[in-house]
Length: 97
Image (tube, rainbow, N blue to C red; front, side, top):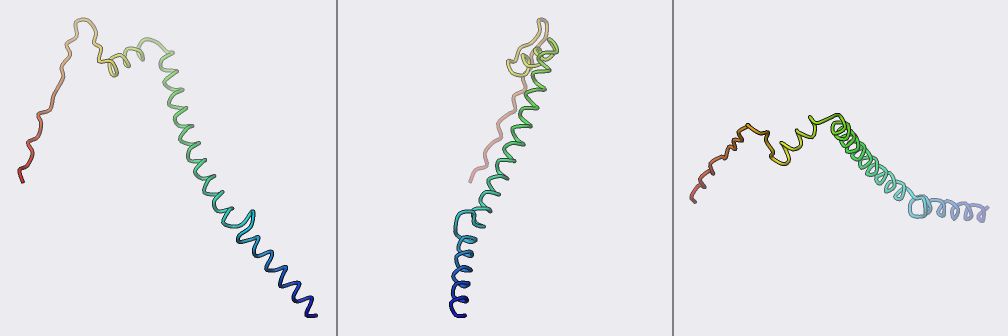
């Protein structure tokens, strides 16, 4: 009877070791779940970026309006006969210490 109890205790300890420390342990499972969550967040971010790029491609394919908008906003271009007005804010005086 003692041998049976000893064998069962050793078996229980071995199984507990694998559960807490060994390969496929709870700590490893937790780390893998965190990694999956990070990968899902990255995937969502990339999907949103792809949708933005797809919308931009569609806009550019639609015609000259998108090209004109980009030329105005990114390159600062204006049409002939238009007047470009740039507003420069005055610097704020620094408070003396």
